[in-house]
Structure formats: structure tokens, C-alpha cells
Amino acid sequence: FPWARHDVTLMVREAGIMLPYLVVGLFVGLLVWRWWRKAAGAEFRGPLLALASALLGPVLVTNVLLKGNWGRPRPEDTVRFGGEWDFVAPGTWSSQCADNCSFPSGEATFAFWGLMALALLPRRWHTWAAGVIVIFASTIALLRMAFGKHYFSDVVIGAAVAVTCILVVNWALHRWQLHERLAAWNTSLKRP
Image (cartoon, rainbow, N blue to C red; front, side, top):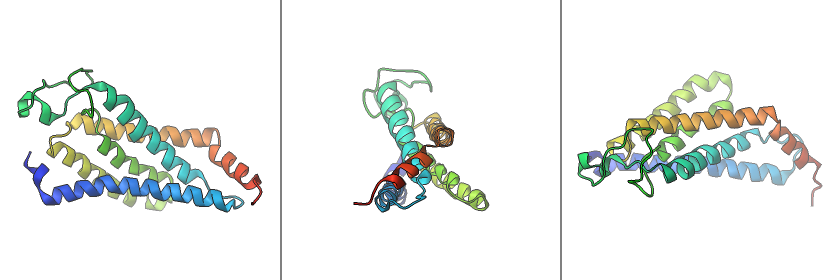
């Protein structure tokens, strides 16, 4: 896996790791700022969608539930590529890998989580924004495969987890009007 040692691809990967964390930090700051201001009609939908879908998709579903329990070894760890473990088909549970396993790709999940921005942007920007986000996320996903860390199925499932969790959280916010309830409750609080 020669790309795993190339300076440019390593820099792109580092950017792919840092960018989602910066976006999450931005939304945490925005949520705290809006909460602190206690402004009437403060909009909480964006920060809630971003933070809840990040916690649900990349953190809980991908890294805690699946990666921590699935046991699928990474490509570089299989016999075919000089490792010690056997190949495990996608969707098949295994006990070969005990920690930080291959299925699904956490970095791909977090990269495709960026699609939640489409729910926050005006419709006229959707095509352009979706193109940029998909190119960025696909680059991160392809690099994970080129580095020998994930199979194609790992990154596809990671993308599917991200999109599904965004849709579920967006649906829940609308269904139960959670962002409106939080805004009303926050407005009702008295300033110190």
C-alpha cells in the first residue's frame, strides 16, 4: 500500500480527520452561544441536527456498535496482504479482530456526515454543496482503501450509516419539534 507512505495523501487524510471535528466544534460553539444569549426565537435546529447526527452515526453506530463488535480485520491485516488473519466477507461477523476493526469505516462515516449541511443550506446551494461534500468524502473513503485500512464495502456502509442517521435525526427534530421546544424553553429562562 504505497499511498499510505506518500506525504500528500497523508496530509489529505489528516485534513479529512480534522475537518469534521472542526465542524462539530463550530456547532458546539454555536449551540452554547445561542443558549447563553437566550435570544427569543434562537434557532437550535442546525446545531441539534449536526451534533445529534454526529453522535448517532460516526460515534455510536459506527465506532461503538459496529467497529467495536464486528471483528472484521482490515485488508492490511489479512493473509492476502501479508497479515495474519483470513479475509472476512462483508456483513459476516468474525472474532479475528478484537479492536479498531475494519467494518465499517469510521473516517468515511464522519466524512459523509458532512451531508447534513444540506438540511441547513438554502435549496439553491444544494447541488454545489452536495458535489463538494461528496467529492471530499469520496476522496477520504478512497484513501482509506488505498492505505489498506478498509474495503469498498466498509466505506459504502459508512456512508450509508451517516446518511441514515442524518435522515433519522432530521425526521425526529421535525416529528417531535425538539428544536422548537428547546428554543421556547431557552427563551423562557430568565437572564441572570
